[in-house]
Length: 558
Image (tube, rainbow, N blue to C red; front, side, top):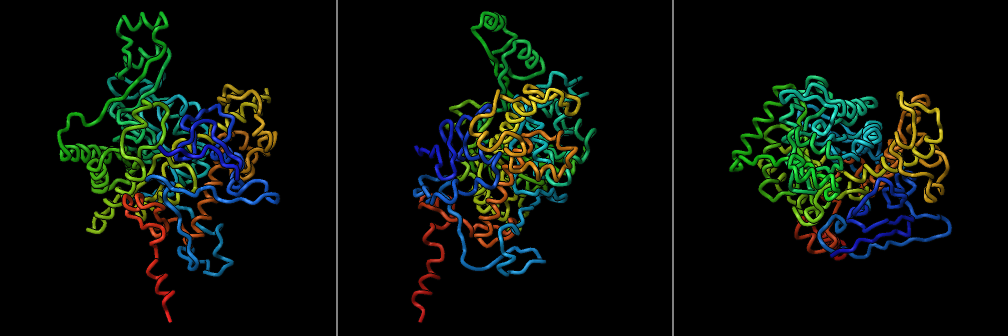
């Protein structure tokens, strides 16, 4: 088993718990006081790209081995000469070929293009309570930065204030809140994507969305995710809420309708209930039947008026992967998100998450292989997004290069949630002390922003004692929204902006070193395999075999 490093002395970061391939802790807490790379980057921004304590240190790489088949076993290629992808107004002079001139803007879509300032998107943030608590930070941050955010499954179904009559939604205040929060700062970049599962389809989420929001939202069909191979789940501790969910049609385990379960709860033998969603396509016997059903679903959504439709699939085997790519391409979908095992979630059965499905790198390598197979035959290939345990700027580079030219975005789950937690915790301390501060009609307090700290931890106080000092991106956000509006921007959104500044600058630097000055010019030539097993599985060349023939010609030339 690979043991990932839990600390990085060069940049002064450390994991609180066990480390994942992504560099995050296996268990990421909203109340964490630091300090993994993503946590610190949410405040320091691009400064974290460099070793700490400049002037009194020298630093050397500790990454001397590459074990196993995973994203960390890929290496980024740098080149000695050339410049590709420069905007028309720039020349290939050394004065223009600088990393700040690298363009990170991308787009996806079949007929209607959705632009994104960064080649990233969030994972699906659905019915988990942590998504609801921190949504204002998540969605405001995504809108300000200009990348897509996904509202996950079951948001309407678990909303006790939602009104559903005869299987159709009459009102959905939580879904409305999530969409409206994003649209408040939306400036044409990014998008809000709303996901549908079996229960959402039955409840009429699509019909509700098109009637109220029209083409302001993208609708997403869901086949699965990388963290689990069953439907979504949440845990509730209230018997009354569990009973509500059961009566709304969900699977609740244990079943609160059973008298013995109620007795056990009242005697504290049962302390929590798990709400589960249903598996899809259980009544279909073949791939052909799935295709027919899928095309019917897409046709119905287009008939309703949706101009942009996407699909999310999980880390199933090769046949479902091929089906997802082929069917999404034939249906002219706008994006297919392929989520590999190795990512994270709010609540998945732990050993299921540890042991099921195809790991991200293997799944993504096959996705490229299948996409290229179609493209070589002259067939259209749907735009792709890769997800599953990706958190850093080098992960973004590698995932985009691995799937190039088909991969347009990298789906990042927990990595884009962490700054929301950090900012809310800071806000709970700082703004909670301002007893008369009212934002959007709500008195700001530690509870209203879901802060978990009573005081700033030492790791934060090292950076400052005010938001302006703590968040490197504070004044950039203020410049964008204006000084008067700044009081309405949650600190979690400021932290997301700050982290994205770090991810963006780091990605620009990697691209410049690869002599690619536009992210859309990235190709598979910019990555190599660091071990033979990874080379075999990804079809990428082993690191010392790249240009070895050209090297020998140079050496033997007379």
